[in-house]
Amino acid sequence: MTERLHVVAGCLLDRHQRLLIVRKRGTDVYMLPGGKPESGETPMATLLREWQEELGGELAEPHLVLLGRFSAPAAHEPDTIVDADVFEIDHAILELMTPAAGGEIEAVDWLALDDQSDPQRLAPLLRDAILPALRERHDIGID
Image 1 (tube, helix red, strand yellow):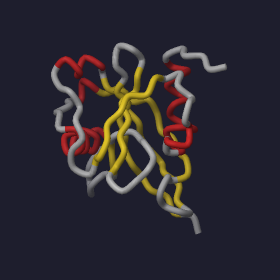
Image 2: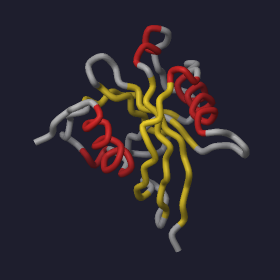
Image 3: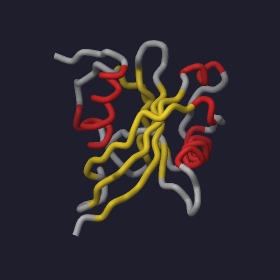
């Protein structure tokens, strides 16, 4: 039986159209910052909390715009589909903070939207659903 897992994630692009990606401790693939909602928590509140825990900076609701809801197989949980509410984060936040690994995050990196050099290092949700949506939204063509 296939399980479904609800998460919330944030897309932060810098001025060079590079996407902030993270790798959790003990894993080998990169994904977006975010996580599972706590009981009664809204998607926005989840992302604000997770961002603080994982990257050490504070976001506010005005920094967030809903990109959409996306689904894909989970990277590390067999027979599980991840359903994600995904928000774009205003890049102006980078004037106030520099994202740094914290909590369960072991590595922080930046990925150019047109980079296809190592797709297997990315979680399926990011690789197969979110990146195509971001490329379309920001008019990044891939040959």
